[in-house]
Length: 448
Image (tube, rainbow, N blue to C red; front, side, top):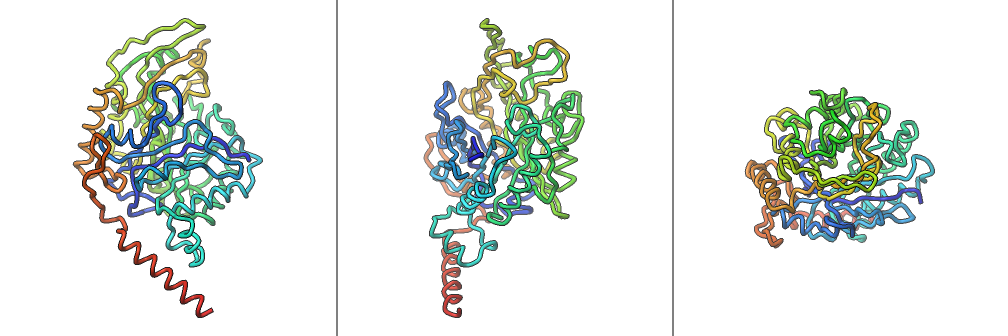
């Protein structure tokens, strides 16, 4: 089996009115979190329920971060289906190469995803019956396949020809087997040197449903690499510089205009969206993202504690204030419709763990020579959590965020008042649909 290391996440939205596949209405935003479900130190052993309790809302993106959740037949162990919400599933699959992956493995994963969703218009009646017998959850599913493919730290990275061929196979099989699943094309953010281009890896709008990017604030590139080990305040236009080439820090290519707008695709941050087939691309996503609070770094065993600078709250919140908590940003980039919070403490000790190392620099030193400790979490430190949840409340009061089941949860984690959105299907409606399907199936069998 050639598909490895699958990260599973539950997003904070259940059923939304789709403009394109699984796209929220204009002016709406999905917020999720990639928490640390590993057994690692500091941020490990976290859970969806704990994260929801800390922020006071049912949000999600619930990953198996240790990479042990893949099976030899191509399927994944999607434990978040037991999270007691109707959050969408955001499944990230990291193939170990761009060749050698069999269609049967892709088909097995597609069948598994199809069995999670309810695809009323896409299956024959007999297949509906099979779906129900396998306990479909009715959740929406996003598949982020082979993310950060433009980076050399991935085993499948920087192999554009074979990656595009593999992506097209995956999309074609999913389109046939699990057409309700939205595929997310999500490279890593490029830098000012153009080290991580997007275009060579673009499979074509007809093979993409959403587009997204991985984007993080670690510091200024001037003075690199030590500037990436300094707590410096994130510019208020940081995200715009990277997704839209608006300043000296970011890429010279506008990912937003060239992909989200040109193809009218939804956008996700880690940041990603885009879809078409002579139709339009709608939304963009921050597929994973965050601001790093630098703790310490070491070189050759010599440890240096990092000055807190503006402080933990400003370091982690500065990044999010450059996008989803920024009114001007949201108005300027309306196709950004999903943002995934990277809720982890992390040790980086090689380029494999860095997102945007400016490899074209001429310095003798690089960041990968150092061992760094960074904390991206927004919901653990009391001050940072207060700032984050206050900003969330402002979005919630403005009815911008689509939470799972639109349920608020108390700070102790218990569910309070259920607020069902008008776009959701009620239990009685679903029951009626179930009975209609059974009736039609029975009529079909009698007549034939």
